[in-house]
Image (tube, rainbow, N blue to C red; front, top):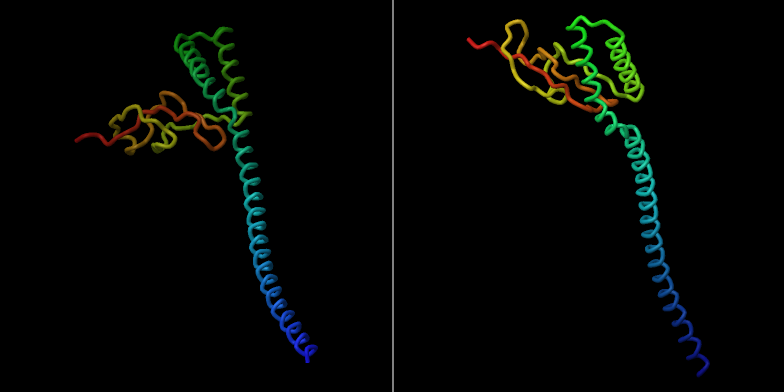
Amino acid sequence: MAEEKNPTPETKEPASEVDALRAQLKQAEQARDEYLTWAKQARADFENYQKRNARDLATERRFAQVPLAGDLLPALDNLERAITAAQQAGDKGPLAQGVAMVQSQLLDVLRRHGVTRMEAMGKPFDPNLHQAVMQQPSAEHPPQTVLQVLEPGYMLHERVLRPARVIVSMAPQA
């Protein structure tokens, strides 16, 4: 009879041990699934980070010329003023032609690097592109139309490098 009692407890221990192992296995599978989900999410986040970083780097490279181009614009304005003054004085000599050539070369270099002059004259006033210096009554033009460009504006690719300084029309006062 002693032999009969020993096999019975041995059969009970493995059953409870199997249940315990099954529970551990279930917990391990849940932990594995949780870690796998976290790993997939981390991988997706890292891939998104890499894409965003590449996009930001490309944008930074594209607009790296902003400080230099912005610093060159006042010199370009002065060349334009010199050409205008020479034309008003009737000077068509080699100095006036040289200044015009320098201005043309500088505009060409800037254009090759994505800097373009905005055409504002006669266009509707856009506060994103223009800086209104003053308003002037006008019966010939609709209100909020650019009447005169005091300082040309420039774009670098699709961004405003410098807004155009303009005089804007307003309705005549009755």
